[in-house]
Length: 398
Image (cartoon, helix red, strand yellow):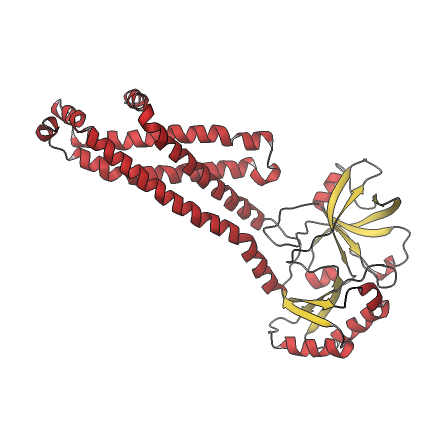
């Protein structure tokens, strides 16, 4: 049976060429959407490294030169003033807030292994871990005892530790950051499992957290993170803004719960995928109409052939299965070409971790299932119509 179907498909290769191309394009489109969706699913299951529940972000607008407009003592005034509010449990300062598009990167080198790593960096205060609910894997977080240390203390994530110190424990190791002609020596005091500040759909990258100290740091972070009592509503925003205005009335403050920032970032990250999925669905509908029309035309052109088969003893079910099987075979051949082309991506590592073998296999299975279902639906009615032809009428058809 298969040999007969292959022979029929080969004889109609010119007629089936455009149809095969449509199926191939549809398969590639569905594969791309499925691969991105599965990649997002894998990312969503991975740890982000912090909790962030009941945490609010306050973005300070201190003018164009915060290093001059924000003296060191203002941070102590802000912390003490905010802790007086009964809803506030923890206060921390940071260079930027989680669930925002802010990114700060730098390159670090390990003197022990010679490895170079470009990592995302965030400068954070001593209460950042308890405020945000950061999970420490090994070592410790920053403390006041780190003030004046000979080497700047840092906390790295597992990915950065593995790339800088492969096969070694990162705790107590030193690394070097070169800024211009000046080299800064840093010491790893802690390791976190992960830290993905852009949320569950952020691609994991090496990450480093450095200590912010109003007394010794040159930078002036403009973000305050507040751990609030569970159940605190947005009504508290007015009281919080009034307290901030009492401390510095000449500044502006943008207040937002991390939950709302997270929702906004997820919407921003998922919107392109949803738009692409809608476009892909529209294209699949167009392809299905094309498949249905071509199959209907093929059945009409093959009425004498079908009548002859019925006259020599073929049953209606045999005709029906032949029409459906021919379409499924044509779809299979087109998808095999697509798989042969797409498999080059994970083989060559062109997309790195974005298209792992796990994602590739899952996307291939989902895409093939979609195309098979589409082909089956498009061939059911033409196959049924062909199986209902009367042998006598079919043989006299002109």
